[in-house]
Image (cartoon, rainbow, N blue to C red; front, side):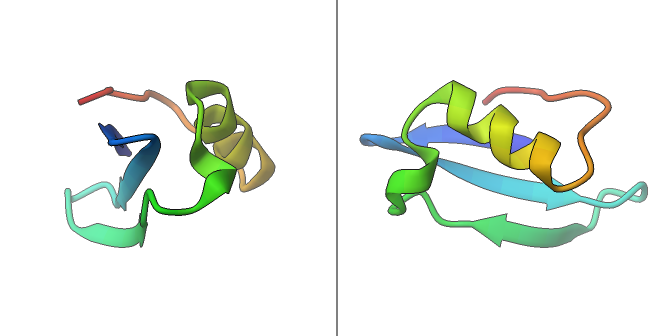
Length: 54
């Protein structure tokens, strides 16, 4: 999973174990305005093992 700050929101890309992108979430949604929002979204959808921040 990778996250990058894009203006006022975060863009998120989730990859599978082989590195292929399986899901992307555009940063133009107010639901991903803070880093806390990103981790909350991930925890609500099964959690995450590591989170490299771009």
